[in-house]
Length: 235
Image (cartoon, rainbow, N blue to C red; front, top):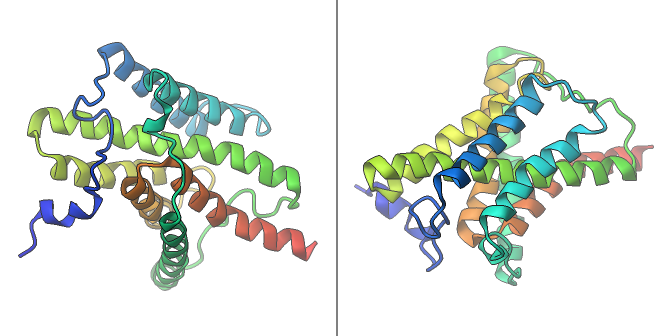
């Protein structure tokens, strides 16, 4: 039987996930900043009323600034020079995303009926739409990563087990990321959990494999921009 530790050995490339185990060490105030960033972003997406044109910038600033601040100038913690092998990871993750989305969409369609469309799917596609989307997606990437790191920090503090902290952290962070889409997808809980939530595993995998936000961000951008590009071609 494969142990939980062995399941996560593929990520042990000599560069561990930062912060959760005190390497680098964050102060209580800095962890408080991370928590505040997460709560504010959740608020923006669920309860705090912000004009739609300002929401992407708000998500970007609220997530990215705290992430860069805790790096204390060592931005290599999150941003690394892409490698040639990363192209393979991007392609495989994109293929995985679309296979997963089609498969889960088919299953849910047959189990729960019609699925909700995203609130923005009826908006005219444009270059500005793509630019605004790219701004927001960088914020979303850091929201997901900070959420994972915070959950891992809490779990690791009590378990001292990296694999358990990572496994549970991924499940919880993906579920939370899915649930913050509740309003945008008309409250379809099953849909947002399995497609928007657990579907984020491919972006998480890319970050965990490379420890490079650029790679998970590129995947996220391509995932969301391809439908918009198709719309632009259609117009």
